Every structure is written in C-alpha cells, then in structure tokens.
Image (cartoon, rainbow, N blue to C red; front, side, top):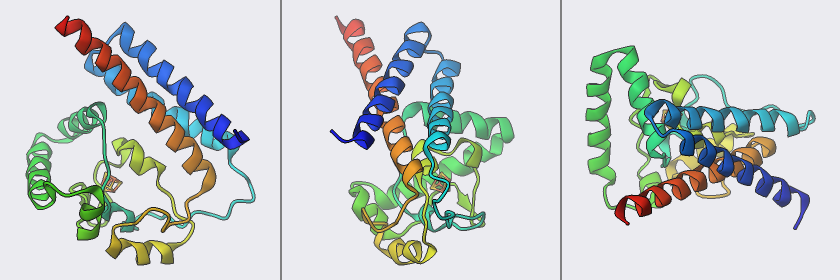
Length: 199
Ligand code: SF4
C-alpha cells in the first residue's frame, strides 16, 4: 500500500468513526447538520495541511459554472441542510427550488449518472451562473476543482467523463477520502438503526 492510499484510508476511517460517534449520541436534525459541517471542515483542514505550495493556482472562479452541469449525488443530511438554509432565507425559495428540482427530475428520471451528465442540464440551484446554495452546497461540489479551464469547456458537453479534468491533487485526495468515510459512517449507523427497529 503506498503512502497516499494509507493516508486516504486513515482519513476515511477517522471520518467514519466520527459520524458514528456523533449520531450514536443524538440523531436529531442539528446532529445531522453537524456531521455534514464537520465532514466539510475536516476535509478542508486536511487539504490545507497537505497542499503542496508549488501547486499551480486552480482555474475555478466566481461566475464560472461549467462543473454545475454534471450529475452530483448527495446524502439525506445534506439535502435537509439545504432545505433548512432555503427556509431560513425566504419561505418562497423552497417552493421555487422544489419546482425546479421536480422539473429537472422529470428530464433525468431512469437515467444513469453518465446519461444525465451527457444531457448537459444545469443544476437546479444554478441561477445567473451562481450557486444559490453555495454556503451549504453538497460535499461532492466542494470536492471539485480544475487546474485547466479549457478542459472544463471540452468536458461539459460530454457530462464530465471520469479523468477529463485535471483536479487539484490535495483537494481531490482529502475530499474523496472524507466523503467516503462520511458516507460509510451514515450507512453503518442507519443499517444498525434499521436492524434495531425491525428486530
Ligand atoms: S449545488 Fe451549487 S455548486 Fe453544486 S452543482 Fe449545483 S449550482 Fe453547482
């Protein structure tokens, strides 16, 4: 096992345990939001720790929205946190985004992530080239970076096939590991809860 793989496994294990410990204590909505925020903070902290100062600057800038045309999966706690954020901002925002999500869902229903990406449809939360939920955007959106704008422009019509973008290495490695640990932690705790509830 190489050092990078070992580092990723360590991060994923630490995050998985953290989610399970936190949700074993309490699984109310604030605890659910807390695990998402913690995963986001942990990934960012670890990224900052390992980033190589010689890395070229990332190409991502405000109002650059190419990557918001690809398929992104999210977990239930992330979705609840987004809904809460919209309710806090304005109650009519929820209705507007539910409508946009439903409209988008009708177009992508039954399709694989690759087929969805190839449809080249904008995310429901993208308006005026800006993410309307940037503060609480999904963990996978936080993971994404690009070192080359031209690669994004070329990959967009094809739904960003794997390997089409040169991502910033430290961000890619840390966020991939932390998101994987976060998802495993959620899966473990809810499988256990389901078994307790049905036994
Ligand atoms: S949630 Fe925001 S950052 Fe993520 S794809 Fe949608 S608009 Fe882009």
